[in-house]
Amino acid sequence: MSISKILENTFSIVCLTIIAVIFAIAPNLSASNHASITMTGSVPEYMSLDMSASDFDFGDPSTEDISNALIGSVTVSSNSASGWALTLSNQNDEFALQSGNDSIPYELNYDGEKLRYGAAVKIDGDNGSNGATRALSKDLSVSMKADKELNAGSYSDELTLEITAN
Image 1 (cartoon, rainbow, N blue to C red):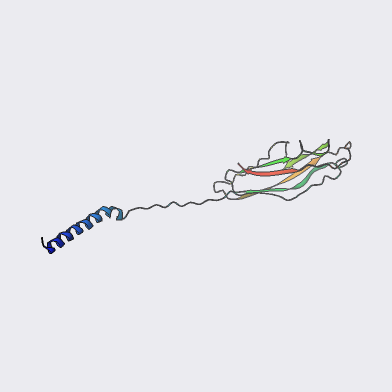
Image 2 (image 1 turned 45 degrees about the vertical axis):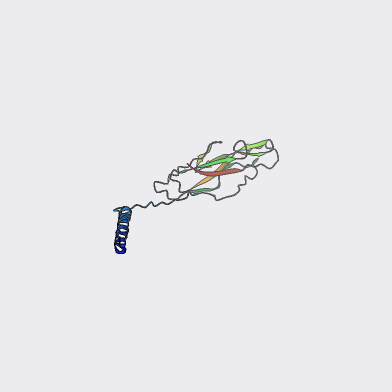
């Protein structure tokens, strides 16, 4: 066999191999008639609780009645689409100022509604379907009847307010 024949056969084999490789990868090189992309975003939950006053002085609870005295305004802000709950708790066993074993009860009102001890204050904070941040401000007030039989002492209680998503 001559060199030209060998080169011709080698050339034919190389060409056939290249054609086979092209046909093998050609389906992967074809264009698609569609494409998709996933796009995402995330909005963090926002909860805020502000109180316009920090302390309240009852004065002398043995001589002064107090009727719906404003403690302060409670402002709740949230973007929770399911709303929120405001929970109020205190350090004593009831709504009462205590000094040692002595105590004098008081009443709390939230937006004019009397609160029962141990009950969570629940705010209907429906933000609608768009979840936009909404702020709601309501007054917290206190009433107390004077007790002339109180022993001398420093009477106190501490209220804690907490906001959570529903």
